[in-house]
Length: 92
Ligand SMILES: [Zn+2]
Image 1 (cartoon, rainbow, N blue to C red):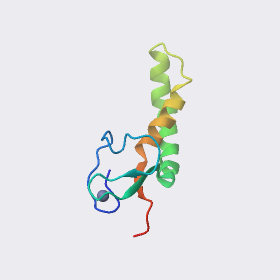
Image 2: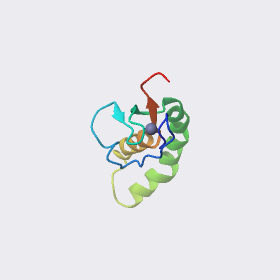
Image 3: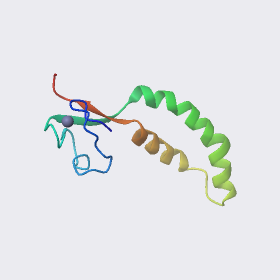
Image 4: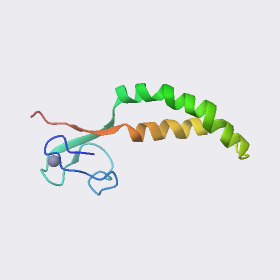
């Protein structure tokens, strides 16, 4: 993930991003940044992700002896994490 101001690369598990609550601050330029999912991307990914879930993952999970329910919830969380982006909270 990149800082929207200075393009400084922030690791997803970096200290700056793992503080609870928004806004967070970029360790390099000290500006406020917000971590939130890209809903547009999320909307684009939800259909293929659901199809993969339905035809590949769910049968595998059931074949492995687990219940298929609950996996959809995990998928939702993973998708949100995948689409998380840094946004600026200050006007440039
Ligand atoms: Zn920065």
